[in-house]
Length: 64
Image (cartoon, rainbow, N blue to C red; front, side):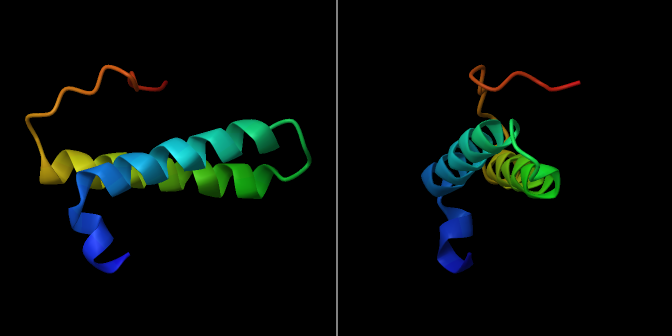
């Protein structure tokens, strides 16, 4: 991801798009791809949180 990793907006965008794709594909037989997209979203959120630990993102509550 290069310089994009340092951009919080890009990381949030990646997480949002990955979650949307995972939701769309969750109704199909592509479960491994869904899992990969979900983990991508989690990793992007994690990287964004590392870059800005003071952010409070209520739009994505913790998942169980």
